[in-house]
Length: 199
Image 1: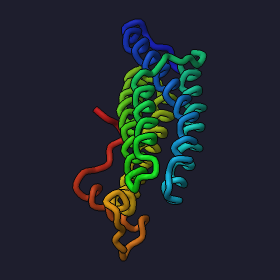
Image 2: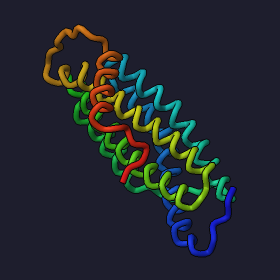
Image 3: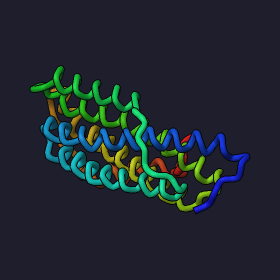
Image 4: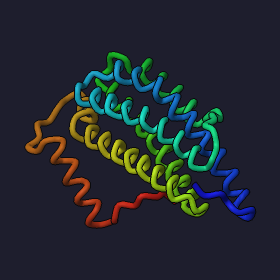
């Protein structure tokens, strides 16, 4: 644990405020993801949501550890962004229930949440490093990596099954979803190195 010097106080205050925001977001997601699991019609997507639910529960605990690394008790600050995104997800489920587009819609809603989390954890990781708190930076980087992986997995599922399902037909593929994802990651890595921070 490292105590910030006086000149870092404004950044530390910002960091702790945003940490309280994402802590609230993760707690809300723990309650919301089971509804998304129930709403999906594809076993693969259900598995992806269930896997990320387990990760999200882990993120709640990890964020608590980040608070502790700054010598603070965990606190929640209402995350209106996630609250709004989850309300939109509920509307999507209601509007597309029984439609072939339901799973594509759920992926869209989930990825909006993932992108918010990626941006938030990217900033928090950078700020923790700037504040000289290596323990917090390492913990936040781990969450950031997991959020990016979850987002990539959803993209693979959308391309592999759910977007075509939304069109009302399915096209057979020669490769498996896992192979498709590996090729996608390989192409992306060859052009742009994977970064662990967001601007």
